[in-house]
Image 1 (cartoon, one colour):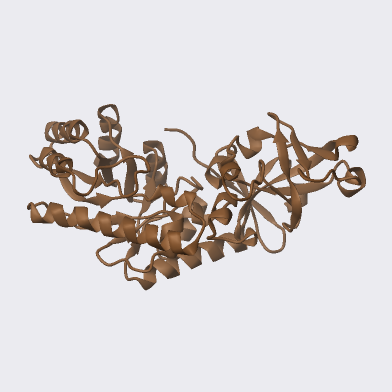
Image 2 (tube, one colour; image 1 turned 60 degrees about the horizontal axis):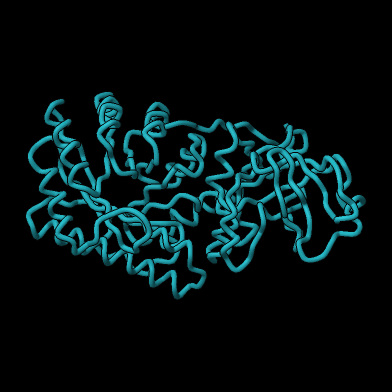
Amino acid sequence: MKLTEISTPAAVIDLAAMQRNIDRMQTRISSFGVKFRPHVKTSKCADVTRLQIQAGATGITVSTLKEAEQFFAAGIKDILYAVGMVPNKLAQAYALIAKGCDLKLLTDSVPSAQAIAKFGREKGISFKVLIEIDTDDHRSGVKPESALLLEIAQALQPSGASVVGVMTHAGSSYDLNSAEALIAMAEQERSLCVRAADRLRAAGFDCPTVSVGSTPTALMAQNLEGVTEVRAGVYVFFDLVMHNVGVCRLDEIALSVVTTVIGHQAEKGWAIVDAGWMAMSRDRGTQKQNHDFGYGQVCTIDGIPLEGIVMNGANQEHGIIANPETPILDIVDRFPVGSQLRILPNHACATGAQFPEYQAVDASGDATTWSRFYGW
């Protein structure tokens, strides 16, 4: 099937652009002599993940246990579940491990650590656990110098669980937009996570893994001394938020939504398309950045960005294509009913999540359907 024959709206992967993104990241991280563990929550697609592993990735990172189950069923065993573990999910995690999955868990609290260790003792196994470190006040984790770090490790220690590493995610890097700031954040992420590992080792705990990463810091890090693995997710597709951060060009964004013009509001300079927020998502992540792309950057069906033209508004199944600064006077002739466009997303993870499948398009314009995982 050709791209122009696809029923719209459709989530489309530019295979050539995605492969370049995969190769760029893998080559960079490998040059430091450390492992790369991609975060597959962005694509949630076995076909995409196989290409990442073929390029040299070691294991994967997931955001839900359902992802872990589905990727394990697809043949991937080395999996890090990078969300804090809670007691009601331990049975689901144990079932995966019992089937042969090398699943690592995450915690940043004593109650969670105690629950993991207790469940492990009851089942006669030792869960592999990483302690999450807060290196940028972004979200979750324990401060590297906190007494809580050692308390959590001690709660894991009495059989049933073991500390296998520390992990951090410098999510605040998404708020930056200069090379200098990103390099500094990457070093902050590295040094503080390594410091946490050093404290655990000095206290007598094994801590073989030091895992860091976000797409911006992975691409801008100048030093990975003491780090054993790097994680990143959205790099595989990139998106407009990453473009504003400064780590990708528009032509490196590999995910887009193909949409069809279904009408006009000529006096307003609007074209109406069949992709609304149900296709693009409600994510307006670029709104707080230096360039607001509305609900997405409009491109020709061939993927060429149309400067100044964005999806300026969205209802559930309707999108408004416009130039927010200047009405498009020839809107009807320029974008006739039935013509097709491609919209680059603000947040690739959120836009991908709106679709059950991708259309993977090669250089000749041929499209192959790739399934996408859902659920928790």
